[in-house]
Length: 239
Image: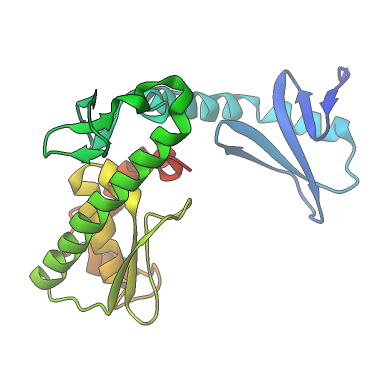
């Protein structure tokens, strides 16, 4: 017997699982785990009991996916709460000192003492983001040029991106954009993204020819791509 469903707007509890139900013009049901939330896309007039049965059948898969997500979230919890700061995949010491400017001295992040006050959390976010963007603009521009020269790629322009879904992009004019948040990641993953985009100057797709080209510069590129996914939570850092 299907139990009664608890609802709040499009939030439902189905088979003991909190779900967001999105009714759309579609023919079938689908379940997605989006930032720790279970999202069920459903045909417009489908009965709730059918959705509940579908969720129940996918219960083990849902729990497994949620477990993976929250393990990743816990891994980066201190970073997301601005209690730790990453640079090149490593936690960087930080101090609140008698200074007006946020700076990186090569070993430490230095913040104004006023930003250490919990009431100034929004100001701290802005200061951290501004500093990371400066670091990224200097380092990523240099690294892109180095790798392009080393492997004989050409590109027509570089800029930073604030994208929430992509680490990088390359357009048909060979203009490359790199997400400033890349500097949080280990350098091997930064290089992977840079070379990934440089290879798009030859192939604006992900065909086998593209992957064969990338494999000349990155060992086991699809394996590195999976490693990059482990840092997916950081793509919206300071959003």
